[in-house]
Image (cartoon, rainbow over all chains, first blue to last red; front, side, top):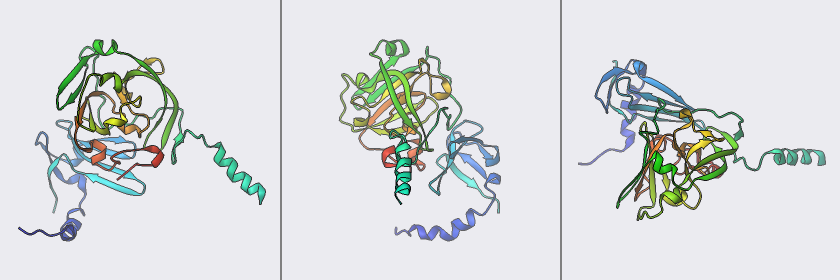
Length: 84
Length: 196
C-alpha cells in the first residue's frame, strides 16, 4: 500500500493540538488506566518536564526545552481522547 | 586600542580551562530527577553485567570486595552547570569487565526506577567510568544516586545514571531514556553535544 509523507499530518495535527492538553484523557501504555493529564505527576528535571502516570508511576510523556527548541515525547501514552 | 585587546584576552584567561564551552561553575550540587527517588537498601542491592554470553551479578558485599579506586574529576551537566574537582570512590568498569567477553560495542545502563542511558563500551573502559558509592568521603546520598551510580565524567552527566543496577551490552547504539526524547546520542561536553 502506498503512503503519504508527513506533510499530510499538517491539517489534522494543527486541529489536534489546539485544545487545553490538561483536559485531555490519556491511556497509560503500561497499566492501561485512563485519566486526565491534569492528574498526572509531573517532575521537573532541569529544563524538562517528566509526566508520570498517577496509577503506576510509568513515564507518560516528556517535554524538554533546549537551545530555543522543544522536544515532546508521548512514549507512554497509548491514546489521547481530545475534547471537541 | 591596546587596552581593549588586553581586556578581551584577560577575560578569556580568567575562564577556568577545565570548563567546557557554555558551562558555568557551581559550588552546590543541583538535584535533577526524572521521577521519585528510589530507596534501595544495600542488603537488596545487586549489580549485573549482561552480554550475549550470559550475566554476571554482584551483591553489595561482593562489590565492596573488588578493587576500589579514588577518583577526582570534573562533572558537567547538560543544563549548563559544571562542578570542578569532585571526589568519588568506586569500582572501575575495567575491573567489572575483567573476564567478560562480548562482541558488542555499546552498553545500555539500567537503573532502579527504570531510567536508561546508552554509552559506547570503549568509553566506559580504560579508566573512563566507575560505579561510584562514595562522594566527598561519605556514602552517596539517595538523591544523588546512592547507594551507587555510574559516573562517566567525560560525557554530560545525564549519562552518569543514578541508582544504577546493571549494564547490558548491545550491538547497536540504541538510545536511552533522554536520548530518545531530545538529548544527544553521545553527549561530549567539549563538543557541546547537548541535543539531537
